[in-house]
Length: 152
Ligand SMILES: O=c1ccn([C@H]2C[C@H](O)[C@@H](COP(=O)(O)OP(=O)(O)OP(=O)(O)O)O2)c(=O)[nH]1
Ligand SMILES: [Mg+2]
Image 1 (tube, helix red, strand yellow):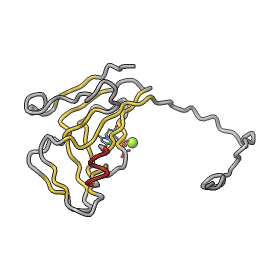
Image 2 (cartoon, helix red, strand yellow):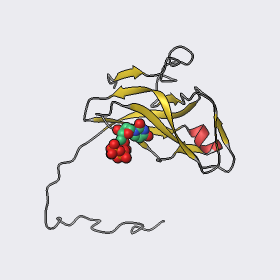
Image 3 (cartoon, helix red, strand yellow):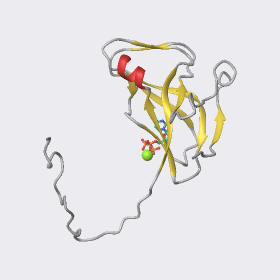
Image 4 (cartoon, protein in one colour):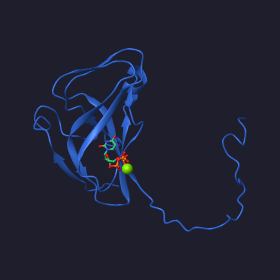
């Protein structure tokens, strides 16, 4: 399934010095996002910084959102993940796409302009309409949770 999404390039280096966001393979779920910073930054262990991606999107369909996720290699090996764990992009957001980069590792991480630091994944959204009730009709689980079914 493909989706038409409006895209604005906010940084002249994107599409000139660095490729525009693209799916790396025919079946990739995520498009890599680049750190469109002016100069290299070093993230000390534990530090987080909000970094522009040089682009904006307008999804425009309430049945779709996008999420910003870590890249597996950077996240696992260097500890470079998202400071908000997952970035959620609303369908009506039109501002610059920002990435919160958090070094959760034990060593400093250097980020160079244009580095692919995160990935953007589009997802379907179901928006709920709440119907207030006094009691739920009891389900098999009821109120059991948080390990209620055991480990083994
Ligand atoms: O990693 C992120 C997360 C969010 N956003 C943008 C798009 C999103 O639609 C908007 C608001 O995000 P969210 O609702 O998660 O943040 P909030 O703290 O609740 O802000 P708001 O009060 O603007 O909704 O910020 C980003 O650019 N990058
Ligand atoms: Mg919000």
